[in-house]
Length: 296
Image 1 (cartoon, rainbow, N blue to C red):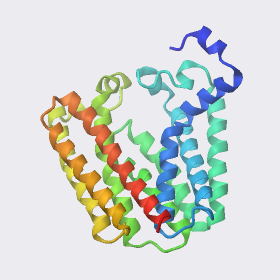
Image 2: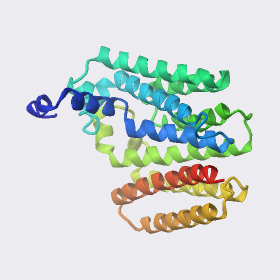
Image 3: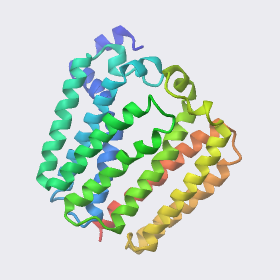
Image 4: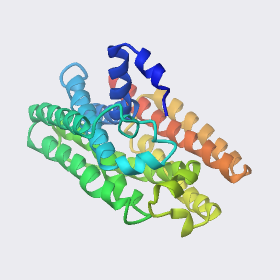
């Protein structure tokens, strides 16, 4: 728990900034917004004419979904060390306040999406509903909730693509599939890092069905598939600048070498190492896609 005197010493601005950062998971929401921007620019959209707006819309939807998720999982968050310092478990924010903030953020995101037409709006609604009404309850039912849950994370680039105007085609389907595949090892590696929290939560425990060693072996298959997906982007010309192709391929080859090196590590160290490498690989993809389109 936070020290009461430390909380009271915060100014109102810092106090609420801290609450909103944790409730909305601002870093994660920003990443989701950037993935939508990548889809928007990938489709030929203009950064100055709609790019900022799609970022704001998806960022608000992601933030609202995060707040609603924390309202739904107050009991779980209270049990786990990793989440016990969030505003609701600590009592720094009431359940009603979290619900109001979630509703305001989701409404703001939906209203901004109306600017882009019906398809991006429907996809935005689908992503929020899928995350909070399907994935979140499924975590209490099955150890394999990460598989259907990966659908919501794959939708933001598609929303960005459709917001830019073109119909759904191969390039965006490959990007969404890549993001879908990335999320499964990302989630399972995170579970490996916080397996003690998983026991405390009372959720279905993946490690009672599969040993850590076997899960990491399965994860290697997903990571191999992810690396193959990355190669499709320069192969099909989705990254057009020669400099960016070289940068992307060099970066991914380095990451593959580091992944191979991690196979010699102990299980806990391997999971932590691969978790960070997996995140870096996706950050590299989105960075290259965005800058390749900006400097085209």
